[in-house]
Image (cartoon, rainbow, N blue to C red):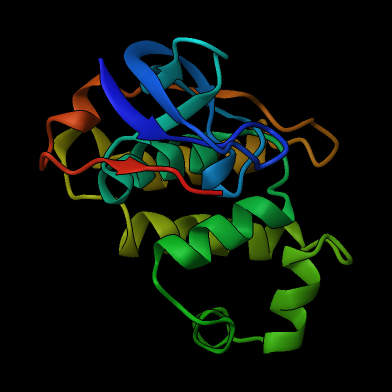
Length: 183
């Protein structure tokens, strides 16, 4: 157990807490997505008041399985997914717009769910993410063809956002990096 100053859901605590490390599922809102759950996430839990603070895994490494899961989804991409892709690609809105041959204003409309992108444009986004973001590993070699086939055969513009569940365990060991979330 360690001593650590933490905050509760209201953001206030005026005393140091004894904490213990526990593993539990964590809704990974820090990703900007509301449908990503990290299983086996390490959290620091206050012994006296049960307040929790996640110790997030290597966020650089964990973006790849999240991006792959989003690319594989059969339903429409929402604005949060598009923003996740853009930020994971480390692009500004202008750079993302240039990549997609559109305007920064249009990217903003997509990211804020004001306008839906066409199925053709969505396919372009998914293919760009595969090409520019996902690591070149053997199981992704045919992903491009799979996505094209799925979007022409199984694509559902009305499907709801699918939950994404990722085991966080291997991402704590990738670089030894972990971050305590601060709110």
